[in-house]
Length: 218
Image (tube, rainbow, N blue to C red; front, side, top):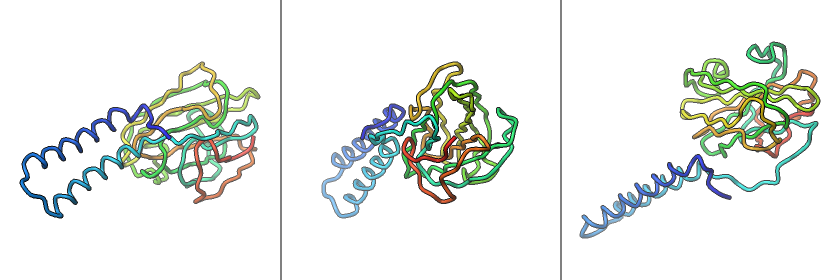
């Protein structure tokens, strides 16, 4: 396990603040009681929580050209047929994963292929489980075309807590299934829009892991 590069500055700041508060208390207090120890423990626990947000566990990622893997850790909150108007302009299957603050927050490519579309949209910060968050919230949309010509759309969505979407995708580049697509700081939601004839392997409320769990087969 290691700390993701997106968390270097925030983690360093959290540790510095914890050290600063602890040092200040040591300097100004002549005697300590249980309340001061609790305060120091609370400060360090908060720092640990912040650092934990950016943890990246080592995983043996799935690589299968006929399968669509999870782009994020979290809980499946949507599995339904929808019309995707931004890129595909046709009916497809939407599979959405809700990322809580407790989940790993890195996002991964669900399939390998060529990035044919990326677009950032400013927007609201509705709770990520809200049905309209997919179209109203701040979000980034990425479309990957596989070697067989099928298109899969990934949408990173900010939520009420997450206010920072990081996307590494660039139009025209070739990407590998499971490689890092981006990062949503402090959780949120990732939507996948996949071909209508795909075979779905997950149900609502299933827990999935990015790069490991198989969501569907092409």
